Image (cartoon, rainbow, N blue to C red):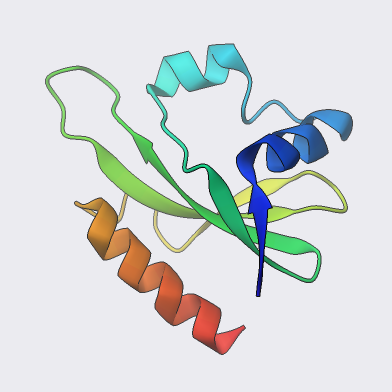
Length: 98
């Protein structure tokens, strides 16, 4: 398993015409991203957090980016995890099977 920086991930998606990391999208979902993703072949896994309104809790989602297309999908359920630690444990478990 390799590590890819968030900047490299952003470039890869932007170069493929994707808007997942655009400022407008980030602002709309009040999204936060880690500084890195875990790369396995042409896939990169990472955790995002979103909060739709300031009175809502921040929840966490595992994502996967196909580096060949720049497409990003949700792994499992959107906002499934109540804490970053829960999402990190689930991601580690997922990566063991990759």
